[in-house]
Length: 191
Image (cartoon, rainbow, N blue to C red; front, side, top):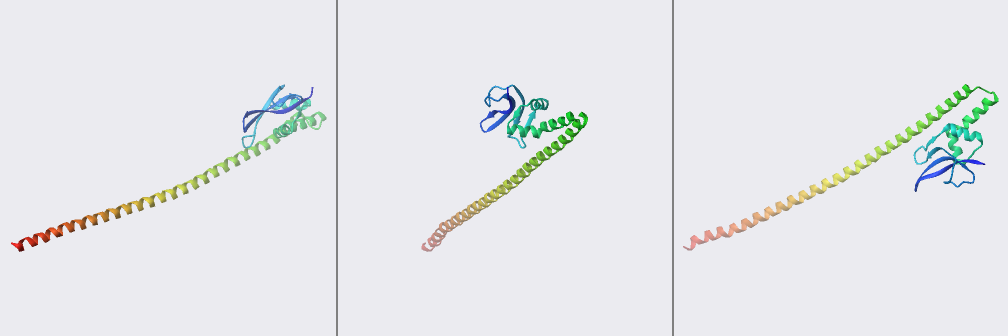
C-alpha cells in the first residue's frame, strides 16, 4: 500500500485549517486516513505548525511521500534534516550524540529566526496602530475645532440678534415715550 503525507482541510469558509495526515494514495483529500501527525494553520503570521516530530520522521523513513506543501512544512520543522543526519550516523560519519548536537544547533537557529519574525510582525502592528491612533487624533482635533468655530459663530450670531432686539426695544420704548412727552407738553399750553 502506497502512503502519502498530505493536508486534510478543515475550518470554515475563507479560513482554512489543515490537519497533517498519513493516508492511502487513493483516498480522497478529506477522506479516510491512517494517522494524524499534526496541524497546520496558514492564517497566522507566520504560519503555525504543530507536528508530532517522531511520527513524522518515522513515516518519512518508511517511505511515505509528502505533497509539496507538506514537504515544505516538514523541511521547515527539521524532519528532513534529522533524516539526513541519521543517514550520516548509519554510514558512520559521526555518532548519535553529534547528530543530536548538530540538529539542536540547527533548530536553535531556526527558532531564533522565527522569534525575530514574530517580534518584527508585532512591532509593525504596534507602529501601524500608533500611526492610526495619531491620524484619528488629528481628525478628531479638526472636527472639534470646526465644532468650536461653529459654536462660536452661533454664539456671535445669537449675541448680535439679542443686541439688535435690545436696540429695537430701546427704539420702540423711545418712540412710545416721545409722543407721551409731547402730549404732556401740549396739554398745559391749551389750558
